[in-house]
Image (cartoon, rainbow, N blue to C red; front, top):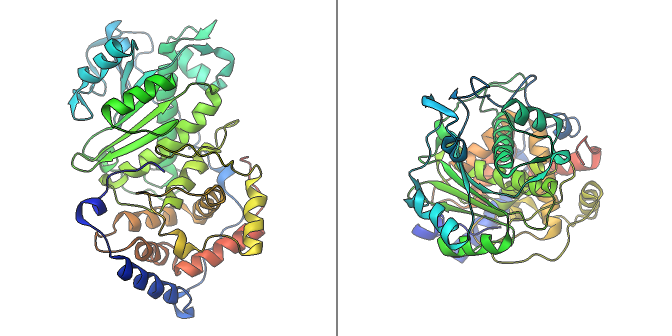
Length: 421
């Protein structure tokens, strides 16, 4: 997992002896029968049936023939081509990127790396995208229809400019699915909840998508000091800015789309409720795999910083986790909850367990999922992750950590694969 700055690094954390004592205490609490109310239940894996609300479409530009008077994003290339009417209602382009004038970042890429980037601004994030053209046949029908409706010429190929629009379209769809999954926005499937402006963050998030690995490494080294092999993300505590960076070299567009979906779910989770707390890594990675596996044809991805993970992930995730549970070889949830997003990476089989536990939590219901995450996001600096996970289980599901683990194991053994791969 990518290393991030966190409140723990600023204020310190429990001493090892205190943490051990707390874990022993929580472990004892977890096996106390009185803590376990009726276990949460769900019928099968609901992941394959979760779709955006019927009739949902990414917001359109108005009118569809320029100059545009309103739209869901502002594109620097479209602005140069004078496609926007004076005073058009669009998200504003960024004045600053990563604590410095936006021109510094854009000019450095142009002058030092000879890269022309397109800056796209949405309500919640700013995306800086530099990708080559690609074949039209790689597009999904709904993607082709959306791009064509916005004036893109798709007779021969998807141009670099159109591909930048494609990725903001994919982000907007992912964001809508994420908010719907969490029950934050109104929808026919879930109880509606609060909708926080900018997901509650002070600043819009930043996303950098670069084609070549060499440029990605130079860019992240120059501005951030370190990087993961294919993707990275950072969190700046003072400004509450979440930053993600990607390189797309030597992978198909479908594979990269999966990586993008995986990491952008991390991004949205970090932005949610406006501040960052060190979280159990199983939740972050489990959510990432959940969204990545919804991209047809994608491949598993692990977001790590500065370390190339060579050990492969299993091919059949369903049977792999069933075997682990049958053998009692899975990581106990009390211990799993202490592996955090600060300095740790998961082993391959732990990635599979993280995906499975998150899928079970999704199957338990949107309200339960949101309450679980809300409790983790409310953790005080003085409390441990194990304690926060216990409180999340109690608040969202009415069980202890051990009760949650037992219910998940029963679900694993009783559930068949859903419609996702």
